[in-house]
Every structure is written in C-alpha cells, then in structure tokens.
Amino acid sequence: MTPPSDPLTPERILEATEDVLRRYGPAKATVVDVARALGVSHGSVYRHFRTKAALREAVTGRWLTRTELALTEILRTPAQPAPAKLRQWLETLFEAKRHKAGDDPELFATYEVLMGESTVVEEHIRELVGQLREMIEEGAADGQFAVADPAAAAQAVFDATARFHDPAYAAEWQKPAIAAEFTAVTDLLLRGLRT
Image (cartoon, rainbow, N blue to C red; front, side, top):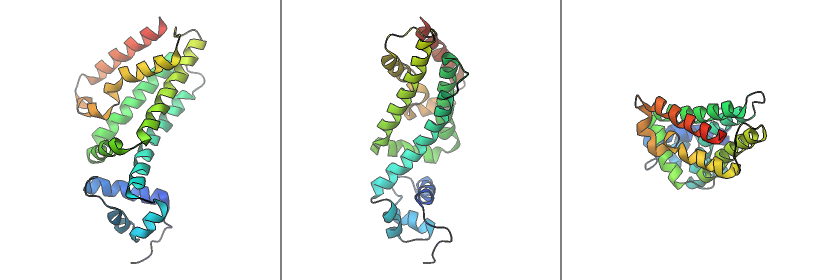
C-alpha cells in the first residue's frame, strides 16, 4: 500500500467516511472501505477513531455542527431585533435541512440512520433549544416578547416547528405548499411570543 501524499488527519478520515457512506450506505460501509479510499490500513483509521461507532458518531457530529455554526452566526447578529433574528434562525434551520435532504438524498438517508444510533443528536437538540432560549430571552428583555419562561417557550417553538427540521418529515419538504405552511407556523409562533 502506497503511503498517502497528505497526512492522515481526523478531518480527511471524516471526509472519506462521508464518501463511503454515500456510496455504500450505513449497513454496508466498513472501516476497511474508508481506509481503502484513503490508501491506508484500517489500523491507521483506528488510531484516530477507536471504533466504527466512534467514527460514525464523529461523522454525525460533524454534519450537525455545520448547521449549528450557521445558526450561531444569526444568534450573534447584534443589530437585529429578536423577532427578526428568530424568524431568520428558523428559516435557516429549515433551509439547511431541506437542502441536505434534496441535494444529497443518499447521504441524508445515511444520516437519518446514524442519528438514530447517535448520542450527539441529543447534544445537538440541546444546543438548538439553547439558542432559541437565548433569542427569546433577548426579546423578553427588550420588551418584544411577553414570555414568563423562556426555556419552556424555546422548547415549545422547537417542538412546534419539528415538521420543518425533523428528518422524519423530509418527504414533505419538497411539496409546493411547504414554504407557505412554514411561514404560517412561524407567523403564528411570533405572534404568540409577543402576547
């Protein structure tokens, strides 16, 4: 086996793992397939990720982190009022999930399986609900939202919008009326937070 020209890094392994998962799916993809794609031994992959489960967990975490980073940017926008920020945040979350499902359905289906096996999903949901709570607290502090319990309101907003970010609903995201339905739910939630 010829040594790879670039050093073997966790990032390279994760990129190769995504390609292998896309090609073979989660049921058939192996660490040996990942190693072969990288031109290294499977032992080299195991030096970075102790188990196949750890590798899959890292791939799932990487995928979820991409979405979190885009949402964090919105959260940190200082000049935007909380209602506008919340609307943009929900739109970005929906579009990110919709984009992933529509543009790369093989990998999205793989992630659906991996998320069912992963503990990083719980962390991801906690992070998203925490970001919602921050925006709702900001809106309450500015008098834009009339909310007694921002944590409960954040969880309610997350739950109420599940249809637009939970992969279980991905088949609905390509329907012609989905954008109007998303807007109606978002408008309703924002009105509810203001009263």
